[in-house]
Image (cartoon, rainbow, N blue to C red; front, top):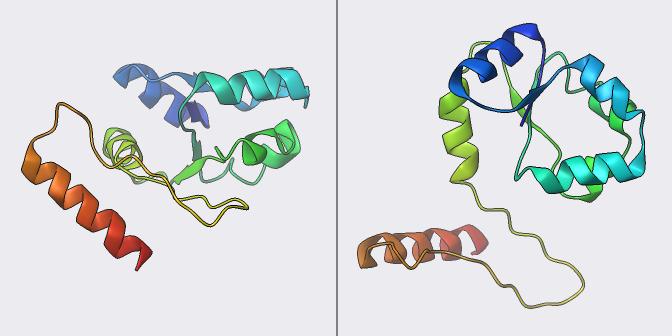
Length: 126
């Protein structure tokens, strides 16, 4: 979901991505249930550079708690390229336990791609 200014919302509309403007976010009115529902609805968020500072004020800590604080999209970047980059990114989050589980592949992937993904994940942690 794109949280952005008019230009980014228009661009998101053209490529078929859901978007919300400042007015849409103000309607949520820091309502915890609505923000939580919004966080569950999307896998990740992107925000315009001029709007990223306003998001905590408009939505409260809901997106941060859900681990879905928006990724910055500057005005010169290509939105589709950034979406593909975020989709290909894996986040490692460690809680109180000292073991780590992470998905590195899909059953439809080729053996070589799986090997590359496992190496990337292991190198990232090393």
